Length: 345
Ligand code: UD1
Image (cartoon, rainbow, N blue to C red):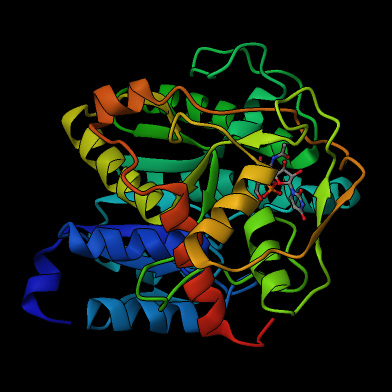
């Protein structure tokens, strides 16, 4: 490692080989931090680490360990750790319904084990990956951070709510020594414009955009639109899709916010503030790439909310962060990444 990188502030990035973690690692390097990737590859691939290294043009510290395993994590803490960003978690809503115990253990247990380690080692800043799923079917749109937290529609949603509560308690217990930013993501999509990193779903994707790009690439049958009888203008569900590079930048902003606001805890919505329906996403893909999306209408998917999009004004005001990339740019970048992947699934 160079002298320069040793002087940079080390930030532990759990789930650093994952979709959002890998893009955040790049953003951290660009902002002058030193990401320390922690990822045991249970749901990601080593080639993401190689992709990060190619984008930044140098080595990046990576530990292939479970972030909750104290013994395996010891080398991470051999040098001072300035902060942590905790992405490592399971995120397939459908799977969480089948295997709730796995989600409770990995998502809640993993967060508890990591938080204890961070506090033992005197790490003062934690950025946590939460989700707009904590709002359930929101009564008012756009949804702001003060909207009520409704009973979770899935075990996955329950784990995000529980982790937020756990972190409130850990923050209180630390009495000003442990600052926490709880980031509630809306729908992250897209990929790095270099196409060196992107979303690598293992097996059939559960989320809209990877399924859509695989359908266009001919790797899957047509995309099924889950329901066109919702009470929305075109009958399909509405979400707030944001570019993963915009989302990555928000993590750097959150770290800086924690540095300016030592020992505080705050929650931030991260979205564009604009909703797009499934049909609008399909049309935007065609507008961005000139390609048709093979698709058919299907029944509703259980657990889907009708419409949700963010009120991101708190993030704009306090984090000084807004999204910059359009839906078309998101889809162009997602398609470039899919082409790079080729026939790989
Ligand atoms: C879901 C979770 C969210 C979680 C995210 C992580 C809910 C309500 N939301 O987001 O909390 O953080 O997964 O993965 O559980 N769609 C189709 N066809 C498809 C796939 C999706 O029409 O093949 C539609 C869905 O019905 C939805 C939209 O596309 O309206 C987005 O779906 P998806 O990408 O799966 O994300 P969410 O369900 O919004």
